[in-house]
Structure formats: structure tokens, C-alpha cells
Amino acid sequence: MELIALPAFEDNYFWLLHDGQEALVVDPGDAAPVTEALRRHGLRLTSILVTHHHGDHTGGVTELRGATGAQVFGPARERIPPPFTPLHGGDTVRALGITFRVIDVPGHTAGHIAYFADAVDGAPLLFCGDTLFSGGCGRIFEGTPAQMLASLDTLAALPADTRVGCAHEYTLSNLRFARAVEPGNTALAQYQQHCQALREAGTPTLPTTIGTERAINPFLRSRERAVTQAVRTHAALATDDDVAVFAALRQWKNEFR
Ligand code: ZN
Ligand code: FE
Image 1 (cartoon, protein in one colour):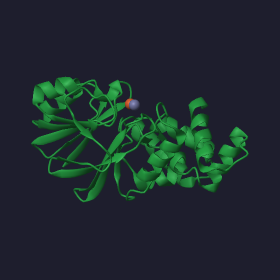
Image 2: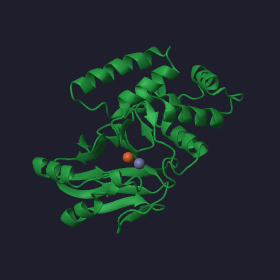
Image 3: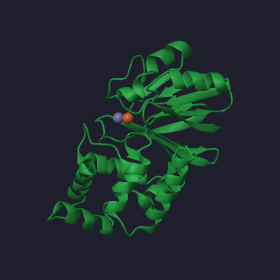
Image 4: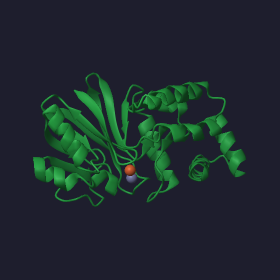
């Protein structure tokens, strides 16, 4: 199996997974880069996995389905270009001989789902759309901070070696914020240098891993003492309630320049 991040638009990645013959793609917001990659590698597209309804994740679905006959999967609670197979948390999807388990991760959108496979070439694999980014998380557009925190808790509990295909290359700007929140985190400082070198070489910083994110991502670390304290100081917060701290952390990021 080969996992490829297809860059698109300003900073999206469409994840293409293939076995040399058949391929699946996640969140194709545009058909052109996918069509080009299928041609280059001589692949047949069999499945399209959609995490949520935003146009930068669904804009290429209809054209790709029409051109390839691929089966489209998406969240039951969201409007995805029909026809598609509607999925709920706990459902499974078979594609390329792999079983993906569907995880409900509301917050960025109300019906957002993620796709998790236990072992793809020996290591777990997660496609999480705009829920978890390296060093950050999605903006809360439709859900609540409590929902987003619960969704991130679910993802953080996956195995440490889970590879995470996030849908945007936001890593460096996320890490600038993360450093402001947690200046004493040496793993974070090292990871920032590593990612800067990758970007200077024109290489994606993704996939990341759950283990890495637990060590460096403030949105998975909001209960760590250093993070909680930084948020409380920044927001002049009188409580250390989990959800209140997480909401204030997300708000801080929204305003961070
Ligand atoms: Zn989105
Ligand atoms: Fe997006």
C-alpha cells in the first residue's frame, strides 16, 4: 500500500491510498489532482471517503464518481453530493481489502466523521478531515467546545503509532501558537524545527502520528498543567473546568496572530 498526500488549493491534502491497481481517495475537493494521480500511477478509483460536507472536501466527488464509478461514503447526518452510502459512528467500510471503522467526531461540523483502520501494512491509519491537525484542531463551526473536546479525546485514545492523514497543511502556523502556549515543551520545540526543515524542502509535514500529537498538540494537552495554567492566565479564567479551558484555548488560537 502506498499513501500519498495530494496537495490542492492553498493548503488542502487529498489522501490517496493504493495497492498498485486500485485506489481510494479521501475528501477530494477537486477532481483534477486526483485524476492526474490516477493516470500517473495507472490506478482505478474504487472508493471515495468523505469526512464532512465542506466544499474543499466534496467539490470533486461528483466528477470523480462519474468518471470512475467509485462508491462514495460519507456522514449520514450531512449533505454530501448524492448518491452516497451514509455512515454512522461504529459502521465499517471495506475498501482495498481494508476495514475502516467510522468514528463520530462532531465539532468542526455537526456530523463530521473519521475513518480508522487497525493495520494497513502493519500500522494503524486515521483519516480525520478537519478535526485534528498537526499541532492544532479544526475551528468549531457547527458543534460545541464540549463536542470537539470529546472528539479529540476519542482520537487521542487511538494507538500511538496511528498515522494521521489530516486534511490541511496548517502545521507551522499551529506550532507557532503551540509554542506560545507551551514554551517549555522541548518535544514541541524539536518537532517545530523538524517541520520547518520539511517545509523548506517542499515536503508535507503529514501524516503525523497520534503519539506525536499527544506530545506536542495543545488541543490534546489542555488538561496538562502547563497548558491549563497558560490558558487560565491568558483568558483570566477563574475555573479549571475541562471544557471551559478547552473553549478558551480554542478562542485564543482564533485570535492569535
Ligand atoms: Zn472543513
Ligand atoms: Fe477543510
